[in-house]
Length: 137
Image (cartoon, rainbow, N blue to C red; front, side, top):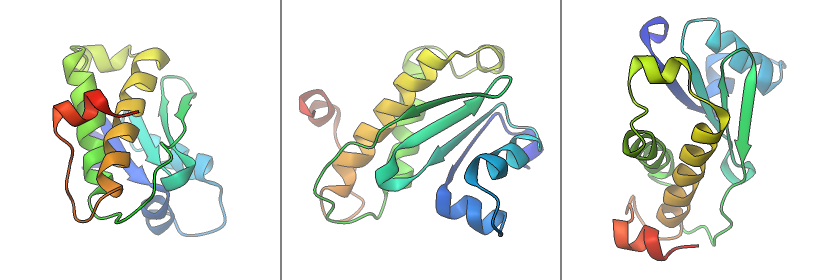
């Protein structure tokens, strides 16, 4: 399935489960990219997120610092925010993903981090509404 995927999002915990052992996260992401996806998005909790794409390019964003109440739904809302920004910018097609740049991915990662930060700042998998996103941070 991974070989037919354009974007794979994994957490650092997921990646360590998929590829157990002492290799660092960058090596594990490289192994995952070798399976076929154009973009691998790695979330690392309070250490932010990164996108690996192109010919070994990487963009990183910091996590939004909030008082964490509940991490349920953090990954799902990160995905929603990331994909929503790519979609808003007309970048969710096979052809656009082939040539996507760091600026576009950084913007999408930042949006994912923002959405996830709001979600973890309250109890339950309670994703934010658009008006909450506009007012946040």
